[in-house]
Length: 142
Length: 410
Image (cartoon, rainbow over all chains, first blue to last red; front, side):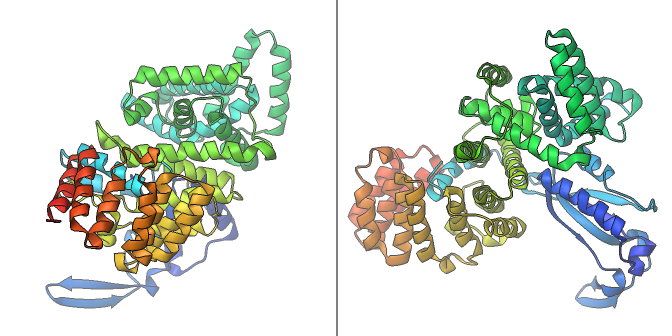
């Protein structure tokens, strides 16, 4: 299952303060661990909300509001997309995220929906069985 | 923390740490089986202690220390205590902190040794699969048993026997030397591909675990690519698995029916995995997995079935037939030729395969032949082929599809 690990914004990230070299090197080391463990699908940092925008919806109406946005703690400064077995595993990984400056911050973990989360029919067995042949058809070296 | 909370947390730590733990211990004690037992013992200690003490700040280091203490206890009881202890002492000096992150280079080598040992040709393929999933994938015996629809005791026996075989054959804990390496790497890649396919094309049973088996195989392939970044064929396997996995969502219709590649809703393909696959492909080479990945990539980048570059696919199958000859590859080649140059040419190629003993019971041969005859307007012959294919397939849904096609010929 996939988890989105959401790094919440802080006053610094919203102010556009670039991370220190110490921070970057600690994060790179952590990312290397994730990649070596084969669990990291993607991960990016985001520019501050001052460079972003929001689109509000009401009926047919669309209202565009440019950043920055006020509620810093609700904003996102970056994310990882991880492929893991359980929420506990996600928690264990996130506990290892470096925090070299000791600043107060928070990281949120959310599971990403996957087909298995939706109703799965009793025909799973049959459909899986049939797929075997497709593979053989596509890739002859089974 | 309740006992079950602790258990789940310990399992999570185990999944993250076990491979490195076992690999590090195996280098110390020079015995993969013993290393795995020591690691398991450390896990048991964690299960006993962590509910009281809480999870330590550096759980990997905690487990390593606990396991090393057990190792020293064990060795102390053995006759070769002095010699082994000296070895450990030397290793200890080389790696002052057992913290997993601290000595990335060493740990990577250890892990790679573990990969090659678990997939050693002295073991049966089943044993290689079980050991790889247990020691590198961090799966429990129960999970492996469920995934392969065999009893837990069967898996346990396989693992015990495998460890005995490794010890008896005196298999060194090492990455094989250059000359042996390609052959050994091929079996490593084969094991991972087998695990993936077991998940991707499950045949029966309580199937919900199977997608996870795909995920495990993909993870192992990614780990291997991290360990052997200079091996093109490893990246080829990663690319193949990423791209195949990208189609998972589109392979099943609303009624649970299989959806073949050309009929899939390409909007449901996982673009993230496709991008990852294409990125891996840039580092891939010309071996069988790389070539299959290149074929898969041709499909992945075609926005509609009509945009498929069949000419290139036909060329790639030709190359695949050279490095990994098989009648099934020939058949696939013929299909691609059919799309690229028309059914007439393809039919000639398929006809050459009709007497191929390996394809005697392969229903896709008459199915492909029927399709080509149908396109050529030779309906009566096409009908016979579709009916023959329908009689050969073991899958009900496919049978009804083939019978539909047969009746469409009259």
